[in-house]
Image (cartoon, rainbow, N blue to C red; front, side, top):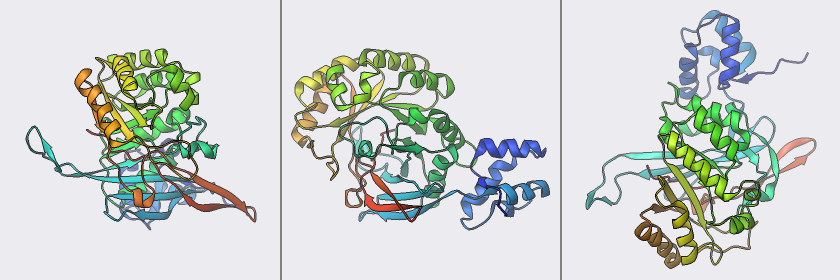
Length: 378
């Protein structure tokens, strides 16, 4: 006898439809999610005070999660945790938790205020079609989209380790190429279970202009991040091949339009590649491109990997000179991304997981590379 497939209890669309079909109030979704989140080994039908019809439904059609943490790595300083999450398909992706101390350092000449906070970087796809030349993920090719539930379950697994304040869609994949699932997952994150503020959710893209336009209408409260990485169309097309389909002039126009109607900032991601995009000329070109816009530029130190070897990281002198030009000449808020988790291969933008087939079943290769380190400054 073939058993009917059981879905993730965190598949909100499926769950709402099934509850509606049996005339059960969807208010039970939040209490069910919270129970499952707090009781790792419990079944969804064990939720206290659940209507009998819902109990039967959950027993027959839903399971607590459809993924599990296959491997967990913790950095030596305790600030970074990398999760290798395995899905029912046999494919896997990584999620990374970054812990930040908001009270560290100084602000306006005095001590900063604020408590510790954690940012979770989630993957939206397994592999990626964009083929960015400096990113290890692009060497994998595209394996598949993650469902909204599979994206949301990365937050479930992470929340069982530490409270999560920020979520950034900057792990494996191009979020805008899995748009519907990404938006559904992001909206679920803002519900009563996870209590994330939309302004603490950032969705990244290399510049899929139609989806930037859609996001402005569908979820304008979230933050948008543009993986720019070059100040001119010619250079950007060389290192970000997808840029050939979305000219820089049109991308910047879409950003302007987004900023006009959205309440959020736009983050500009810029990986610093020695002798490629890190000169003073490039800094001035970038400054002129973004002058006067409500953006935050994140300069990202490049981290070489075994699968991408043609690039080198910019030196600290070049990096901070680049930052100084953007800040002092063009009055653009510019940060240098804090590097975290290098000892567990958890640094910026180098996620790569190999999958092999053995005896007809999916098997995870032990090769684990870096993932985006996100500490986006709030």
